Image 1 (cartoon, one colour):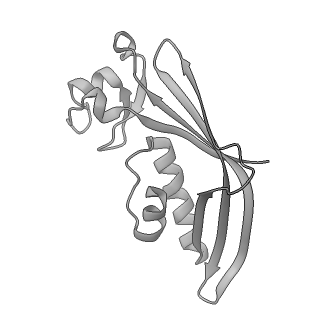
Image 2 (spheres, rainbow, N blue to C red):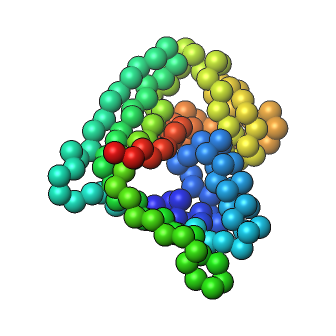
Length: 153
């Protein structure tokens, strides 16, 4: 999982939007300031789980898929002396992915430039980011994870 590479090696996930990447950066800075390391594993639940589900929704701007699955989420925080908190919970994991943008609406869809982080319309990034000059194709910007969350059963 790419988020694990973020916590272990500082490698930014390529499949999330700028807001999610910024959230991860702030979280890592807070943990580092407190001298804590976060360890997390998420695996599909065994047994009576309903498996994986997907609901698609098409809007004027793009199509989104909300995928969900019952998972076992192990979370622990540790400092130099060892674990300070551990939890193993059965949860539902939800991930929302935006894809298939309506090309007639790209001037209204705002995304974060994957190169410099500036917020621009998809159509502007197709011409070249006004801040860093990098030119992107739609396939460089989509699909993208726009939300990920966990909910207790």
